[in-house]
Length: 540
Image (cartoon, rainbow, N blue to C red; front, top):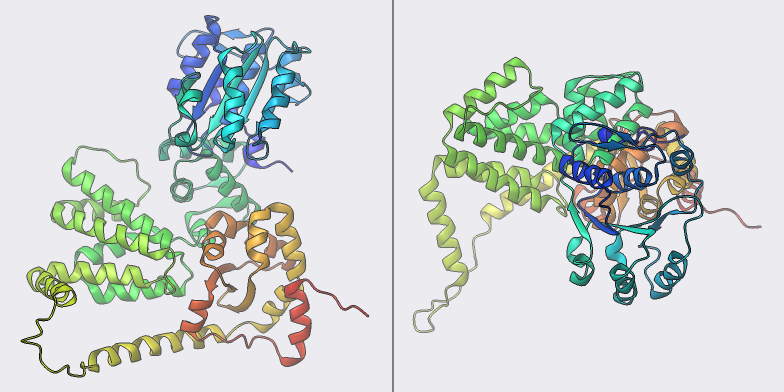
């Protein structure tokens, strides 16, 4: 079954989301018969580069192009034999090449041998080379001569996400178009159209969460929506999407920022602990906090700005008051601290620690800024200043009272967390272990990259509907904890075990800190579980 992205891929210039400046230029060039022979499309992934290349290729070869008035002056008819053969991938004159798997000089030489042949059925031969930055230097040199003097019947469209890796000699021979990331409003509008076609009800909060998660990429937004539709019924709410993606609810977010700016540090720390226990992906929560703080700053500078928001009336009023009643310096300080906590979160063995430290530092700077900075500078001086031999005193044993108390508290919290994790659901966990080989096979068929990470990971427990997986590598952890990858794994587990659950991937460091022991299976199941996890079999 095709994905939403494939099923609803635009077929006309007018259906392209965003990129208005590029669509208008290309359309006018076709109408005025000023078609170039080499184009370079640059921009981040999933924003329409390949889609627009296909529409352009179809329009220049259309037998009955539809001429219009306005910004888009011409469209493909999608009815003639040329348009149909292109849409059905039945023509050899449209060639899409993945440069990642055709990086060598020989690949480009083979291409050069073919381009001199006239098109078999179309007017133009089109070569769409995706991820062109992956070509080797030798391959680029081989391509250079062809771009300088291509045959009249050939058009090259090069697409890349990393423009800085393209040689200047190649860039200078192409008409370059820079694709922009899509705005939240543009993504939401497109998702509404797709949901209507799929006969799915989805509320504004759910659309807002998905568009935030996509970070400007239409393909990512459609992919997330596709997987949520596969997991849920025909009515999708924001709360459901928050639970599936491991993000926080609207109320949690607004309350957190309100308590932060009110310096209610005790409530803030309790909120962070609750979010962690509920399985909220704290990196995403940190991102939403940053986004909200940014909004408050912009509204503070220019209250006239009208931001499209799905916040309830009560929460919108709270945010308006927070923007009015807080100095811009405080908001900027909060942004700086939570930007740092986001950067520190990626490889931290204790997910909630960066958020806690950012909140505490903000609280201290608000209440005793001079004292805080003075102690901070004193600490730096003690750490860096040399000791004069003449005035040096006998070294005394440093006091360890405070660190001991702190270590005891951390250990107590870790033991408490471990006890919670140990209260697993043995029956459900055993069901996952019994299907682990099938789960891996299904993941492999869906995404080889996720499979490679998951194959070297081990299931360790199931608690409060959160399935914990241990991996030895932080790279694997970050890869598997990506929301889109999580959704893929959750969907496969739900299909094979008929159980809906969240997943959380932890590293060996976290396992030691939390003192987790896998006691969810009895001794008699150890051998059987080992076979399931590793995909092994008994050889007689």
